[in-house]
Image 1: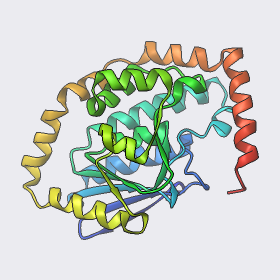
Image 2: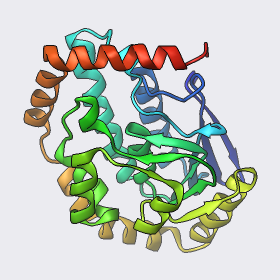
Image 3: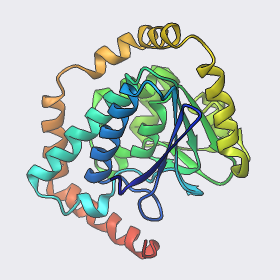
Amino acid sequence: MNTTFQLSVRDRLAIIMLDRGRSNAINHQMVKELTECIQSLELDASVGGLIITGKPGFFSSGVDLIEAYEYDADQSRALWTDFLALQRKLVSFKKPMVAAISGHSPAGGCVLAVCSDYRVMADGSFIIGLNEIPVGIIVPDSIFHLYSFWLGQHKAYQYLMEGKLLKVNEALDVGLIDEISPAESLLTTAERKIRTYMQLNPVTWSQSKLNLRSELIGKLNTDQEGVLNRMLAQWWAPEVRKGLQMLIQNLKSKTPAA
């Protein structure tokens, strides 16, 4: 049973609605449950497409820093190893996948969204982007490859290095999202798009998708052990821990009980 999202299937379309606390912060449990679900949906012949969405106001705020800060060394390694594996699984998902971005989507939330084939974002005062570096997290090259697949290397590099978070209109202008929808019709808009994909020959569509992503998938499948070791060394560095502590105190002061 999934505890971090709700899954529904209707007329061959699966919908994953992230459902963990107010902001859908990603913990290790969510990573494991999503990975298992994605694997299952890929093998399920009765499912022709997937929409991933969140709650009004939040798609996902990214990795749950409050929980992850308390992980020990083994738990931290497992979280980041499995999160990068989930990214690979989503990028190589052979069926159509649309992200219906229901609100804020920084950091890990943005990573989940950019794995999709098409992104519709709710109109509003929301942000999306990758802000790992200001938080103190080293960006693995796999994240850069994924980001630059949509933004181009120039923008992806600059945005990553400054931890840029974009407003909805800015994200549309640079191609980080593909469409803006009123919040109340977000899922309808996403479903309309994905069903245009699902009407096409599934073998032709999926093989073409994998062909067009073959270079990206290859890069994401390279050995990440060295990158992971450097990420984890920095994660445990005293100055980063101190910065995370301050950030977490700030988050706790803003976050009501889930």
